[in-house]
Image (cartoon, rainbow, N blue to C red; front, side, top):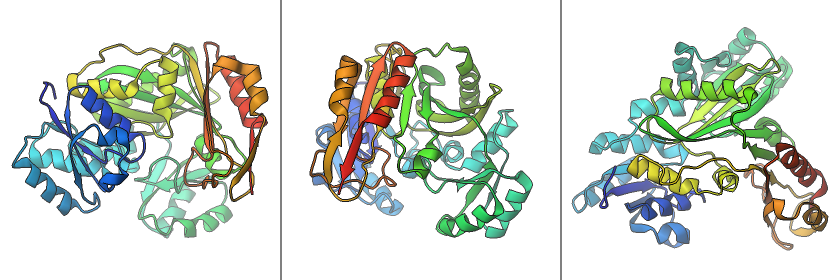
Length: 409
């Protein structure tokens, strides 16, 4: 998709919140952007609303309605591409490409990014080390898979996003307790629990070439973040990607992209590093990471990955190469108690200790209602710190996790 009159259909241009910045980046990079989404026009974030040449308000869950709207628009304007960075509607985007003869990922290419079991089968065939895994849509199938794989194991939706409806199971008793919680999930993946640290391998690609990569270290693993309310989840985008202990994961990431035939756009892969240094694949999505990780990358590079993605999609390149200049860490805070935020403790001392190494403090103000920590990783606010030295960032993230406290009642 190149040229000054390139017209791009953007599905869900304003939700989740980061989508507005991708929409704005497309327009800033030279595209005419037509939005199709289920947010009322008045609810669109300003960054998206101002970037759109036209907006169709239609339920994205109603595929017939989406196609009717697009066929109507096609009488007046030629589409050059369609983009969707929100996981639930990536298959819809692929169907639109197939129907209108547009470039980009087909349905066949998209399915392995959405179906975790299909994904692992493709990678197994390519020789990638994946956890032992079985998919099933029945309770009996879960029990049979658990017996075959052994405990501990992980049970999660084959088409899920993040850690939603994902459980670590250590015994048959725990499995019996968890199964009723998964009744609403039509098909699950039962897989080996890999004991190790968890990292990401995130890329912006154009025509099969990696233009930018990011490795982020989860502290602790996302599954633990979701299990324990008292945890302040932290993640660190790492500056030195040449570190020897990261190479197995980076090499695996490149192998995974090739095996899945990914060409252009953002990807977000998760992988494990075991105590022996082995890299084990977790999962991959053909979209950017959520939970403000793109913003964290921007702090790490002093760059703009929203614009970088748009340049890759529209022009097949990055106008300005992006490189990690800092280790950048994010810390998400969860208030103690319920109700409204009453007070915050420890922030002044941390600001005095770390000064300009703290680059963002975005906490709910006193009086605001506390958010549901199970529904959003960002919870009641977040902090970003950065420094050239990794140990300094580790120290800062741990101090913000332990010393900064938010209270609600």
